Image (cartoon, rainbow, N blue to C red; front, side):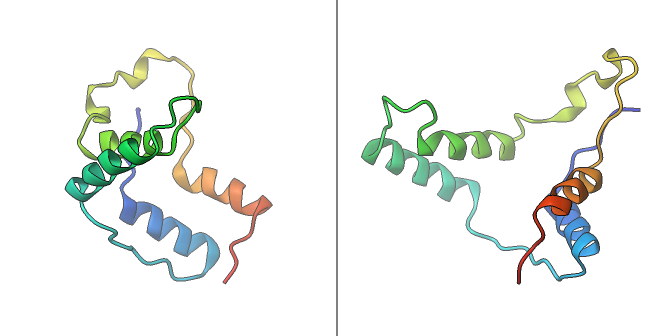
Length: 102
């Protein structure tokens, strides 16, 4: 059992299948660019009094990109009886409440 890492092209394909609309990948820069952007934003808007400053979500994304999220090290079978939710199921449930606009 266990789960498989969902890659961006997988999500693109699922969204296209669920909506019937063509979803495209958009490359907005690499991890190096993201890390520079995080440093700039942390300097200009550190958000010391905010619970979740703007740069924190960007830092999380950077950590996921640099393989800190490697699921191969996680023992998914240690939770007996757990049913993993497929990305297609999650997105279908979301789309049933918020349809995609053009």
